[in-house]
Image (cartoon, rainbow, N blue to C red):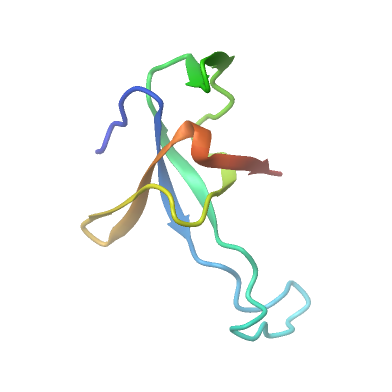
Length: 94
């Protein structure tokens, strides 16, 4: 298992839906944003962003949106992950 350090978070890639809940197929051009699920969070209880300290808002299992070209892609067997700084995560999707 990969354990992130400091302000890093390990995300498991989730493929974007190919069709809506009602069964309508989404074209490649209109495909929705890709999300990821938090696979692991460093043991840090706080995150430092731009010289300010915040409580770590993430926990394992959260579905998140992140900056498109940030992080490091990692492949562990068949699983694909992104190791990313906590500050590059934009939102938690509920």
